[in-house]
Length: 221
Image (cartoon, rainbow, N blue to C red; front, side, top):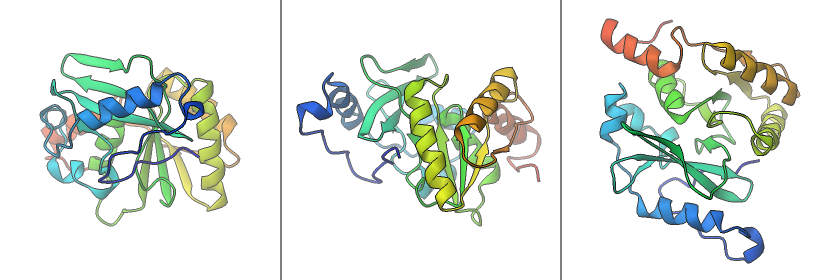
């Protein structure tokens, strides 16, 4: 099972060479610890999110702001922090010389419903639209794009743990051919039947932007 974020605290560095033979954990930790929590990040607000969503306990310490104003989204594997994504108005890239894992909310091990999305911004947008105060059991996992061997292994473990505690797993990938392909791939990894939840537009952020413009941010029911 991937190691979920530790809310409100910096992640401890790996202490042995065998835990970090290529130095990717040390590099990831240095970037993460140099960034700072900002519940009113301008880029995220510009994407249609609100402070209440960004400050929700499920998203505590799942993103930070670097010195250039970009958002840092951390990735985790079974050993802890393993990589990160940078996102901003002119930035969309994965960290250099680090490993892609899964971006997770800290309630991933206990939530009654887990939503698998393509990117962290999808998770934040979906939560703004659908995770009301009465749905505190929502957790999110973002794959960070294409599913590689590391992601398949981590997702297989995540599905097995979720199945053991009878958690609902919903594939909420994009409303396009690639999103459908992700659903088919994930269905092969899971020991239970997965649900599919599609955005109306291409992705959840596009849905959120539409709702903000047309319905004042109210989710479709």
